[in-house]
Structures are given as structure tokens and as C-alpha cells.
Length: 324
Length: 281
Picture 1: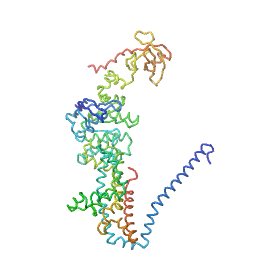
Picture 2: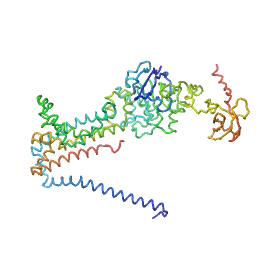
Picture 3: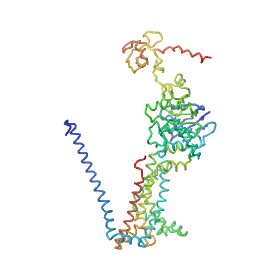
Picture 4: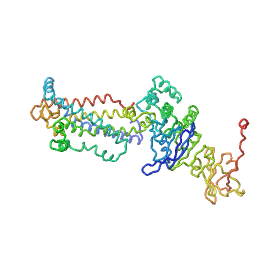
């Protein structure tokens, strides 16, 4: 097991940040800790790194009980949201810091730092200072610095939170590829469900200091354990009081058997998607259609329609090689 | 006027009036600084050299003046040393740690600026004077505090206590603790982190605080006058020498030593500003 957290509780001045939390992060995995702000995910990450001491519970990293170890001896790489770049050092010296603390020979340090700077594509910036770098470059430098000491686990606290949308998307793809190359057990904190689903192989949903659910992105999306997880991972509407995904609904003629009758209130075109608001006896429900479906059905406001759960489409047959 | 619409004229007018008020403000600020600061110091320099450089040299090399300089440097050295170490420790404690009494310490650290130095001197005599229990206890062990260098160092430390702390604290707050935490996760011990991460980040604030402390220590009069007894060739510092010389109608001696004191402090500030990077590179 890469990281194992057992019954960890942490309070700050009476506020319970983590309430008897237990999770396992498998060795070599790329795991997202996903949840709303103030839900405890950053505290959990900092407890794993040793930057916070839990009130009770245990932390095990790569088979070693680390609960009592200081951050210096846990062998974790930690990347901060605001980079925590050493401002008075060049990029090279930032990345070399952990190695020079360990008194590695100069030649070894130079070789390793050069490799890492190439890995994160900032080898041409080795002699610059952090202030001369863009946000994305600084975050890649911080990653190289954390990887330099060959940590057992890599922990990233909202690593893309301070970057603009475009750079953010690029770095997501890049982090996934980096993980494929380096294979270090990685956990990153995010409040953005799209980012979690895009990057991570496993997602741990945390809210109010508790684990809501753990699983692959598909498991969480298709079989949410609670309404909270369902609404946090994607859009939710209610049909006869039951929460459903708007894109799992379809619009049919009003008298169709099993359909809930209603009247179209509004049709909003959002590019490829079309959002149809339908008033039913149990309140308003919104249905997400593709543009093609909306045009085919020719729904306009005022039309009487029926709404029902779409029949599950037929699965696409798996390719022949996979069946063998 | 090149633009003939009303909005442009209004904008031009408001630009002119801002320019006028800016010039007005500058004039007032410069006149204020000139009258309060530059004129007296300039006159002092001028009067010092009225009778030529040779006379200044004679006054500065007077044995009592030299002794006073030596005492001043000794007192200033220990006061700067003490307040640098204390100031660093107190700053880190105030910014990075939670402890009972933190707010009280934070509020009291500026106290020396609020209290008159003479009061400080008298208060120290009440604690360490030869007829008090703590002073007597120390005197029995051969340590004289009052009317001796230790008392003068304590008095100087007292009056310059906040200078390093007040320079370093805001910088420590601004840099935050994430760099230090990053260093820990990379394996650096707390002393290593302090030396390699924290200290380089606050070095200019610290240097500024040290120079201000030095300037204050060189020039302290009131508190030192009370605790030293102002004994010529024994416990007389350079500022006390200036005071005595002036009262004894040795105006040339007073001017020369005052000039030297001012020059040292100004030089320290100038050197620091020359070394200091314009903005963090």
C-alpha cells in the first residue's frame, strides 16, 4: 500500500477538519482528493506529509508507520498551490535543494537536476530566478524540486489552483503523462470535479471532514453513494422528487406510458447542448438534449410533453482482441 | 489646444490641477524636511569645520574624546549583538508560533518607543542600583551594573529593542511559511531551514534593523546619562561627551564629536542603501 490513513481526527479550535478518516491510496496510483472548500482535503494531505499533527489516528507511508515522524523523514514530495519557490535561489538551486541538504556529490546533483529540468521541460530556465518565470513554469519547477529527492509519495495541494484556465488544462494532461513516466504514488487535492475526473485514476470525495466515497471516476459518476456525491460530480435535476442526471432524461409525446406529463417552460441553446426546462406537477425538471435531438423533437416553449428516464442504449461491442 | 470637445478640456484641466497639487505637496514636504532636518545638520557640519580640519582632528583625538568613543563603540557593539539575536528570535516567535502571552508581547514590544529614555534609566536604577537586592547580589559577585558598562548596555538595549523586530516581522509575515515547509519536506532540519531559507529572505530587513539599532545605540543620551553616572574617562559615551563639552563652553569639541557621530550613522545608512537591491530581483 502506498499510503494508509487510519481513523485520523484533526480539530482546529473546536472545528473538526477531519472526523475519523480512513483511506488507502494504492502504490503507484494517481488519486484525487476531491471536495468542497473547507471540507478537510488539504488538512488530510498535510497530515500525510507531517505538516499537521493529527489529534488521533495513524498514517502509514510505504509500509512504515509515519505518525510520529517529522516531515523531514517521511520521504514525501509536497507541491504547494502557490509554488513555495525559494525566491533567492535560481531554478537549478531550487531543484537541487533536497539533494544538497543530503550532501550528494556535486556531479551527481548536476546530472539529476538536469534530468529533472528536462523532464518538466524547463531546462533552458535553469539560471533564472523564480520571479522571472510564469506561474506554470514555477509550478513545474516545484514539481521537479519535489521529485528530486525520489519521494515514496508525491502530494500536490491544489497544484493548478492559481493558474489560468488554459495553462491549467495543459498542466493536467502533462501531470497525467508525467505520472505514466515516473509512476510515483501521487495524491492531489482539487475542488474541481472535471480536473479530478480528467487526471485521476481514483477519486476520494471528502466533505465535512468525512470520506463520502472512493472509486474510479466512472464508479463515482454512475453509482454515487449519496446525493451529495452525485451533485458534486455532475449536474443533477429531480424527476418526481428523485435525483437524476439531466442527460439521462428524454422527452417523449405527452401521453406515453410511464412518462411524467409536463409543459415546456423554456428552451436554452448552449452551443452543442440544449437545455429544456419542463414544468411538471412535482416541480420543474431540466432535460439536457443534444442539438440534433432537440431539432428532431422540435420542442418549443408551451408544448405539452412527457419526460422519462432514457432507456439504456445498447452497449458498443468490445473489440474482438479484448474478448480473447 | 489640439482637442476641441468639452470632455477633453475638462480632462486637461483636471490634469493641470493634479500637477499643480503634486508640485505643491512636494514643495511642502521638501521645505518641512529641509527646515527640520537638513538645515540644522548642515549648520552643524558647517560650524564643525569653521576653524579648519586640523582643529577638528585635535578635538577628535583629545584623550577624553577618544575614551568616550571607545566606550560608545563597546556599548553599541553589545547592544546591537543583543538586539539582533533577541530581535530575530522574537520576530520568528511572534510570526511563526502560537503561545500564551503572544498578544501581550506583541503589544509591549513597542513600549521602549513610548517611554522617555530618562524614565528607562531611572527604572533600571530601581532594579539594578547598588542598594537594591538584585543589584547588591550582583555587586557581591563583583558585577557592577549601574555606573558601569553592563548597565549602559542594558539601557541601550532597552531603548532600541523594537527596531530589529519591527523591520523583520512584516517581511516574515509577507514571505509566509510555505517556503519553510517546502524545505522541511525536502529534508532540511529546522536550523538548516532557518539558515538557508528564512535568513536569506529576511536579510535586508534584518540589516536595516541592525543599522537603525546601531544608529540609535551610538546616539543614545538620556537613558545612558542616568545609568552611567557620566564619569569622564570612565563611563562617558560620545553623546554624553558632546553634552558635557557644550556645557563647559568647549563648543569646538562638542561640534567635532557630534559631527563624527552623525557621520558614522549616515554612512551606515548610505552603505546599506547602496548594497540593498533596488527590488527583489
